[in-house]
Image (cartoon, rainbow, N blue to C red; front, side, top):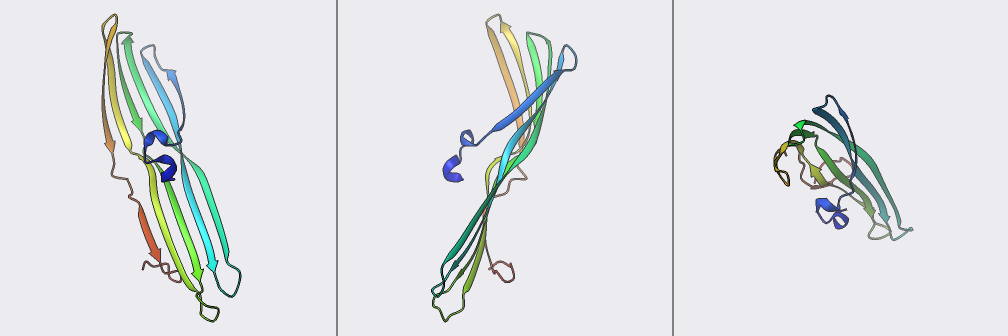
Length: 169
């Protein structure tokens, strides 16, 4: 996935859905859904000298939805104030490999397993406050403040496990 996304947010698949209603003539409410994807893969391989080598690879991709909400207040066309809350969203991938390898036909197989987990794209919970004001008939200024909560971010990891006990090596 990293080679496709290039670790750049502009390259991530993005499918937003949104809508809004006028609560009063001066107040609008909006809700949206950001659709992300969770990727999981598993590979099983058996490398042997006395029998055919086999391999099985399975990948699942599932959608994951994260909502966002907004309020917009505008007394007239000259000024507006808005608030947006975006819930966190993580696009993750998990890769599990289970292998057995046999060096010679008379030796037992050596099992090796590992798990790799990666957060491909992480958008933290954020609160945004913004506004605009018309300075002249042809000039408008905009201001936005944003705070992001990064404490739920999970760093990528690689875990090699003993296949008989599933404990780390």
